[in-house]
Image 1 (tube, rainbow, N blue to C red):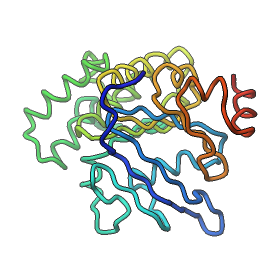
Image 2: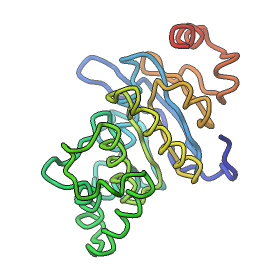
Image 3: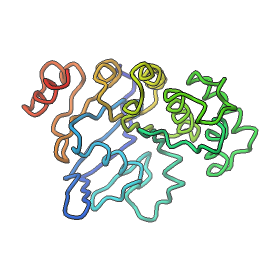
Image 4: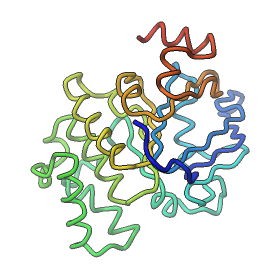
Length: 249
């Protein structure tokens, strides 16, 4: 899904290293993501994909290197998490909704607390976003009364409520029943069509083929392959990529 005007670099990752103790997870990763670009990140378990996007969100502190999003230095210890949350939205595998709050309250919380948005304005924004993700009728329910697919759509609306420059998705459909996967992917496709800059860790190769501008393949803490979908699926350069694709397609 080629977007027009892929020029301005929004996410700039330079030579990032990350370890847990003696285990090196990221080994000098560099990547630039441009405005409106959709980047799908795939690779085997333990290859560093999720750690990579958690570093972009500042959830994991890097050992060395640089990460900037919309000019904000994520790698700088002085950069506050509240500033990062205005730039970067994140959707997790397991929803992470507040169970004691309604769907609407989950979505309005951060705009009111972090952006100091008036409650009325935040409510209007939240209802618009819940309409956009197809669940406005769930606004007054608590998360426990919604399906997995609905919970994930609430999580997407909640991330969008901060009006971020970039949306990160960490295997957003892997905890869902098969029939609920499509409803979440449909929302993500609409976001991509609307020009949202997105980095998506996923095993949904149909989605990758249809929506991505760029696909990157992670293995053992490195980006092994970076290509447009057509090339990635039909003529990848690296044997490791070919082996991975032969196992999942």
